[in-house]
Length: 223
Image 1 (cartoon, rainbow, N blue to C red):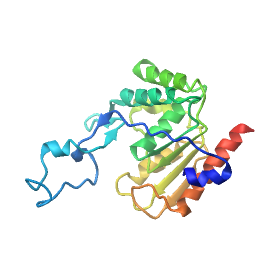
Image 2 (spheres, rainbow, N blue to C red):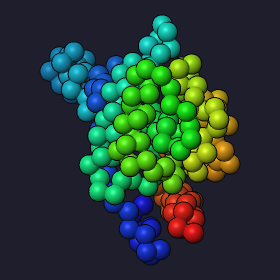
Image 3 (spheres, rainbow, N blue to C red):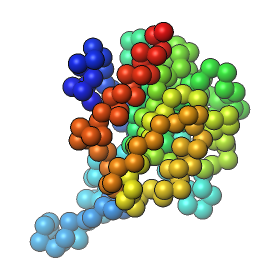
Image 4 (cartoon, rainbow, N blue to C red):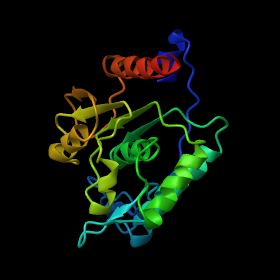
């Protein structure tokens, strides 16, 4: 992305925050453990499963549908943003990170009501971290809308921060209805559908819509 934006005199400074909640192999859709002959014991031990370098912003409770560790995840983002001189202009996320990108963008919108309790605490923290400035854009790859009722304020009113959504027509990890649900909860969203699965397309054909979108958002914000 940085190389694609350079000819337009846009040189992004990219930061890559790591989510605070570690996942085990069994938590990751589509993860395949090492088979026999690839490691001592063949099937992989419990210790090996816990060594996967994958992290989550929250964990969905299967019984209640609630998101555990949500506050910790959003506070990690607040900490990261506060360390960036001048704050951040936009956010890009994939899968659960795409869902988080939309939540973060909405939370930072001026005039959006701050919820009560712990929800309100992390919202205030992310706003303070960016010195009260809204994001100029949010890019969502294979994202989805957050279903817990306590996050209803994120989408009502709709997310007005400019958003670009990349959807894979063969995505079997995130249900299309969930992805489309997020699109429908954003104002004037831009949508690109690629003929692939649950991944970030990086060929020029799919990078150019991203570059055009960011350029429009950044240059439009300067007017």
